[in-house]
Amino acid sequence: MKLNFEKYFEKITNTKGLVIILLIGVSLLVLPGLFPKSTSTENTAKAASCFSDRKAYEQELEKRLAHMLSTVRGISHVSVMITLEDVGEMYYAQNEAYDEKNTDDGTLTEKERQSEGAPALKSDAHGGQSPILLKTGMPKISGVLITAKGADDATVQAAVISAVRAVLNVAPHRVQVLCKA
Image (cartoon, rainbow, N blue to C red; front, side, top):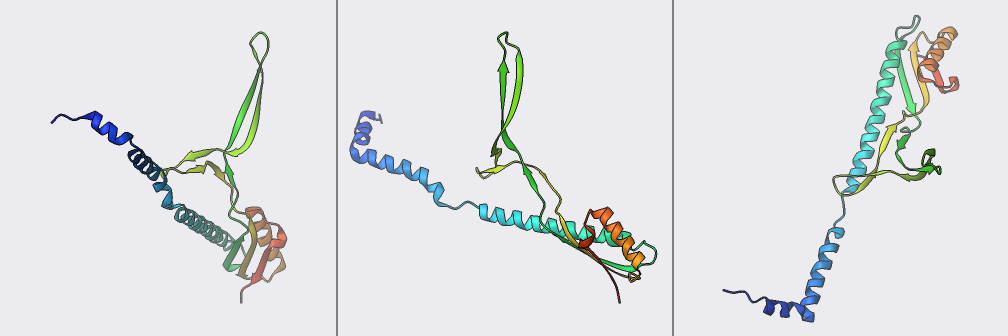
């Protein structure tokens, strides 16, 4: 049972053998690219997560503000509705380059930082790349609606608007206070 390598080598070196080996190699390289990656499902999951986080943030603000306003003298049965303008800003890491200049004696004189503008990327588990998220800013509040019993008094309305401005940093024209029936 001695293997004859010369015999196998002659079979491989003919043109048919080389073409077959070449086709197998190319198909192995192209085959993984034919199947779509699950990025669309990942993006959908991220969007749904962002939406649920936004809703949770909105509801938590409403609950806390309603609780605090219900302690104000002169009003009761407070309901609060907050609308958000956006989902907040996201700050991504940027690639940066540093230029160092040396003097004739070899000492470091200057170090300049230059941002290249391209986002810094990290590899994920699926072999793809995604930008590095440094921090997420809170969403902007576009309006606040408050209904409460006893809110028909102008001084109570002014106090409620002032409190909302202080807590949420919202312009007074974006706050509406109405009296509950």
